[in-house]
Image 1 (spheres, one colour):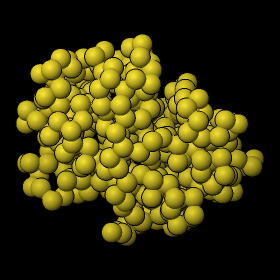
Image 2 (spheres, rainbow, N blue to C red):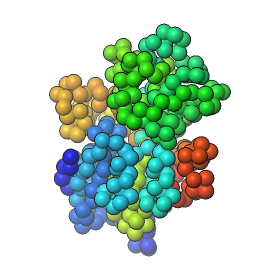
Image 3 (cartoon, rainbow, N blue to C red):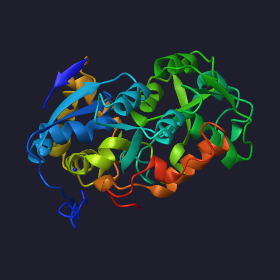
Length: 340
């Protein structure tokens, strides 16, 4: 389903893109841009940037294209059918970067100490049998979508931290809905997922929480902003304008739903805005708790947590899930935003 909504420091005259107190970029003249998105709270900065006119102020005429999963969005960006998107770093994304098709240009969702993040869950049956913490995952089954997914990365990082690398039974189930069903029915023992899903499952007593990803992968850059390699290299003003508007949307989102000093009215307004795109099949009063539960920090000013991204790339290479000679420079264009 497609809904029509409507270049950074580069080549001399575009030298100043980032400024103290906010990310800025030269405004364009109504350049058409297609933005890939999932109907998740974590994609809210793009929705906020559209609804509050930040894309328009940057000279971008935005059209959203919604996807059911991240991998098809990555393929669409690689082919040039979509200009920008947000996704986790996966083996598929890295392989597209190795082929010169895509580039990571900014940071998005992140794990942060003190902020609700991804939760490690156990099935009720496994919990009753003693799986009460990630330290007990040795020999247990763990749901993932596919090999090379972020779920795969998280499961193995937990196993390595607890001293039993390679000794968790990974179960590829393709879709999140299938993983949820398998966990609830006890067909798999464990999983890790973002808070809006985890909290709903635990509140319904369908599963048990046993740990937090932030305790195992500190400062994890969960998702990134990416574009085609051609956009990153040749369309620098457009790319910078997108990142500037996206960053303004992220700042509003963080202030309203993540920071503890946000006021009630601002939070309620933000929830209503996001509900235009997320959980649209539910009335606002039923969707609001899930939207609030999905409010993890979006990295301010789209900065890149390069330590985390490098760790992820190194892990994928060590596991032979991507070519061993791909460099961080092939995956990431660090010229657009700060590296932190």
